[in-house]
Length: 197
Image (cartoon, rainbow, N blue to C red; front, side, top):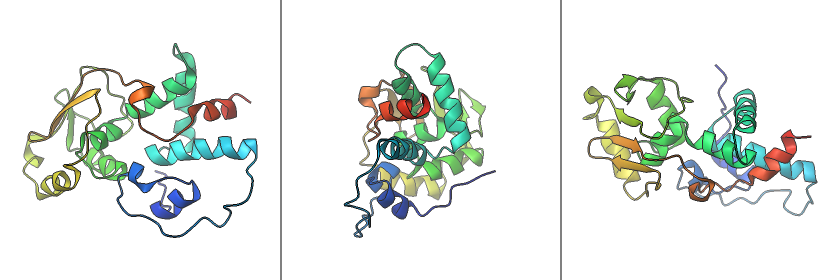
């Protein structure tokens, strides 16, 4: 299985991205070396795609598949793409505050700690739907790991498209998110332009 092992702060600096979007409170003091160079149109489009891939932890081939799915759906392709990425199971755990970062959420899913509508799911890219109930298995709820996570993520606000019950480590997807409520600093129109060449 391919895994992206690039140091997070270094990658954030290269993509001009605030580490807070990755669930990390650290700040990098270094400045990018190429700060004064003008970027081409293709360079801007590529950077937006790399940002989206890096934030959601998706590699090139699955990201291309998401784009193809988004293109077949009704509505704006860019908005559809962002909604599909937002509905990934690992992202839902991160947004609900059951994981500090999306990488940790991915690991929690991989380790079979998560139930979706009462069934164990160990696929981080699993797409949840409106009405789905995602929760941590009963035997893991009392683990110290989740107490530590909740202590760190207590101040995180839950998006309007889900209802989280953090005492019981449970989250309900109330509706499909819209682009307006997805607070990811990505210009999806540039990604659409890149792929439609």
